[in-house]
Every structure is written in C-alpha cells, then in structure tokens.
Length: 449
Image (cartoon, rainbow, N blue to C red; front, side):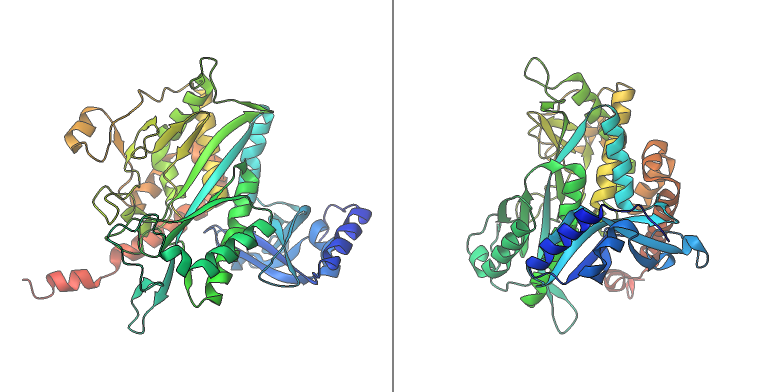
C-alpha cells in the first residue's frame, strides 16, 4: 500500500516538536457511520507512514463501509495530515491525528469525513466557505444496581433546572477539566451551562470552518468520555434519556462566507436572496435531513411538542423559519441561522454535509422559504398549523429513513455506498425497535383483556 509522500523535512520537524512536548504515541482517529470515534495507537516514530499511507484497519470491521473481507479493498487506511494533530491533555504522551478514510489508495467515498470534504469542495468551487458554531448538549449519568439510569448528581433536582448555579460547582472538576482540555486542543470554548434537564449540560464553541467544527466535536467526545469516566460518571449524548425532561440537541449556527463577506447579509441590512434560498433548501429537504440529523429511534422522542421540566422541549417539530424563533426548525439571526434539528447523536460530518447539499439545492433552484414565522409554534393548535401549510417533521425513524431513501439530493451528497449502508442499518434499527416488547406494553396489556 502506497500513499502520497509527505515533505520529509516537515514530518521530521513535526515529530521533533511533538517529542519535545512529551508525545510518544499517536492516536490515529477516524469516525464511523454512527459518529463514533475509532482508531488505534501508533508510535510517534511512525508519523511518516500515518500521513503518507495511514494506519491500517480491517474494512469490514467498521460500521458503514460495506467493504469485502478479501482483496485490496478489504483494507481501510486512516490517513492524517500534519495540520490536524493535537496533544491530548488527559492522556499524557498521546496526540490525536484526525484522519480520513482511504481504500486502495483513493479517498474512500463512504468515510464520513470524506463526505464533508466533498461538500465543502462544492462550496469552494463557488468561492464560499461555511462557518458553524456547534452547541452539543449532554448528560452526566450513572447506572444503578437495578439497571436503571439516573443523573450522576443526586442533588440535581430543581423543578426548573435551567442555568442551575448549584449543580455547576458540584461538577466543576469535570466541567473545568473539560474546558481546559478542549482549549489546550485548540477549541474556542465560549460558555458552559446547566441545561433544561437534570444532569444535562451544554458547551458552546466559537464559529469555525465546517470541517474543523466537525473535527473539534469528535475531539470533544473523546475528552468528555475520558474525563467523565475519571469521575465515575457516564458521559451520554443519547438524545432523550428521560421521558419527562428535554433531550439533548446539537444546534448548529450556520453562516456562509466569501472571503470576509457574509453571503447571508443583504444590502438592506436584512437577509440576502442567497441566504433565503439556502434556508428554503434546508426546509424543503427537512424530512430527509431528519434521518441524518436525528439518526436514532430515541431521537424522535425529543422531536415532540409538550410540557417538560423547563416548560417546553425546545426541540423543533414543525418545518418553519423565523427571526429569533426557537420554536421553529430554523431560527434566523443577523447574518446566520440556527439549525435546531440535529440532536446529540448526529454524526457531525454527515449532518453538515447534508445541510450543505440542501442549502445549495435551494440556491440552485432559487427556492422560496415562505414567510417568516414569529409565532410561538408550540402554542398554536394543530389545526392552525395545518391551515398555514406548515409541515411536521417525521414522527419516527422509519418515516425519516423512507424520506432519505427518496431524496436524491441528500442521497447524492452521502454517496452511493454510505447512502445505501445508512438506510440498511437504520431500517434494521427501526425494525428491531418496532418488534421489541417493552415494560410499558406488558404493564398496560398483559392482564387487560
């Protein structure tokens, strides 16, 4: 297996700099279809092979590759670049190499990072770049001896726990350690707060180029899992672990740039036509985007309207847009919009790639997003929602997967292999769930008839 030779002097300089920081091992990390970081440890003196050929893996052992068990295409190589190496503060002596997938010497079409690289290349052809500010929400949990899951902090019990300043100090060792680790890795941490559910927190990152934002999110996952484990807690990005409390989103603040000019800004101080077309594309493809941005059975227990501890779920259910409207799918703000559909389980590479494809389709077809919605959509009766022609998001994973299968634009962005594998795996997940008999069903029906 051969790759593209790296500049020997640049490799040597980077290796020496890492060694001076105490690094002896490289964590070569890639991302599978489910958005889970995968990889292996490689000695630092093998840096040249990591950036020219890549670390090798058995392709069929990775979710979503559909690679054969024999022949040259059975080998999956995770290849990194010298510009995507960061020391891991919680793991002394180890540095992460952010890698993309290669098979048989070529970029692998079903590697999620390669999918986003293709999408950002489409933007670059027009002279544009997308910047995103991601806002991952998550829970700190523990598992009781009887198997039930509960918030890690037993004292986190406020009736309205949003922005609780009692819980933050109790978890300060984890939260401050997480912030310090992320900043040492080059992330711009803007704020950390207690969110709307017991045991739930949020970290906001500064806006960055889309690919770097996704890379940063994967680094965040690695750091949070490790540091939570040190505290005896379980870091969870499950969309909705508790039925009566809000779920965890992965809101994305999105803007489009041409050099130093925001493409979404109009000459009159409002939104440009290009910006409105982009938003229209996101709304038009909302059903298919749901499968990517809300990719689990549990995701659709978040995408509902109803009462919760904070008074609302804060998760969108209706396909609409409006100025600073947190009840709509797209919340428009000066020069950017907040895409409120993604939940914490979403693969950031696939979600952002699909978003780009939807937005560009809206621009190319000059779609109209319709009128702004300033109303509280959670307060409107369903018959009024229908009268206005506002569509509902898919109500379960099976419905979303069906929409993705029909959507040629989003499917084309994923690529043939990943599109097919995503649908196959998610349809199997939905079928397995649909066949499962829950305790709720037994309690309700076992003796009822």
